Length: 359
Image 1 (cartoon, rainbow, N blue to C red):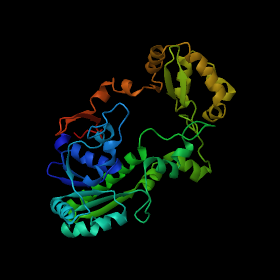
Image 2 (image 1 turned 135 degrees about the vertical axis):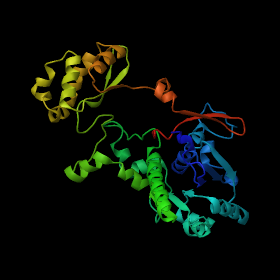
Image 3 (image 1 turned 45 degrees about the vertical axis):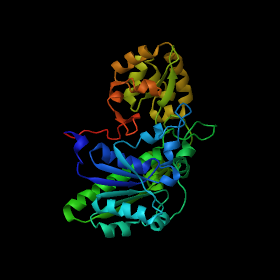
Image 4 (image 1 turned 90 degrees about the vertical axis):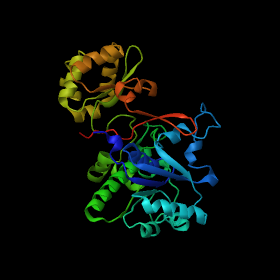
């Protein structure tokens, strides 16, 4: 099925900036919807237009960051502080199926862009509202702040060193997924009842909902996750990194006893799983440093390709630690690149946000 036409005829108005809200808009644009992105002309548009790397053209109208979540959108520069600007958005809302907003509740009301106002114009409208800390909290919210407030920053990085944020705005991306799911449910309900809807999520709730096992380790076992780098608090060796003879880094994820035994057999360490200190996962977690000393010495005897060949032949979970250039040498990654030439002639690239198929 050609997913690029799935939502043809659906109209989305994006009153959102930075990453989370625009990522929702791009999802619908990828699937064929008409997405109109409203930007503020008095501030130069979406702030991410100016979030440029040192090697980007300083006078260019857009940045690579902006391009990452603004694909196949029609941009309208509208000043919502004017009556004319508000009326222009009201005209768009009359024909829209979905409005995406990341205004604070106070700002939405001040600009005349709240749910009650827009739904009175179009009762079938689905109004999707994204906030930082909830609708009742008027507080600036950027991804790193939420990584801190939701516990991610505390447990990231390495033991004995400063916390380290994730190098992508993951909380924004998680919130975008939550809002997309809510919108899809609202579309389904509207198909059944004809009613519009107000759907919302916050960055904080989305972040907490994604704490998964780390939250449960605290809720059930009273364990506060500590910085461990890429290592796993419950499994060893899992997330442990080893250098090969050619100074390439590999990560191991032996999640079962059988996988650990196979790892040892492949590395010609058949007696390791029978040593008392490594005989169970719990003991390996306890004696992780000693285990990694043994494994590190053995990995140094292989090149990366030699180690991969041996381990993958026996289905040991192992991965190369790739930089971005190496990531996009992979055929699967190349197939996920979306290109677009903008009205100004700029040739842009980004990766798909839709990573599924529907047959």
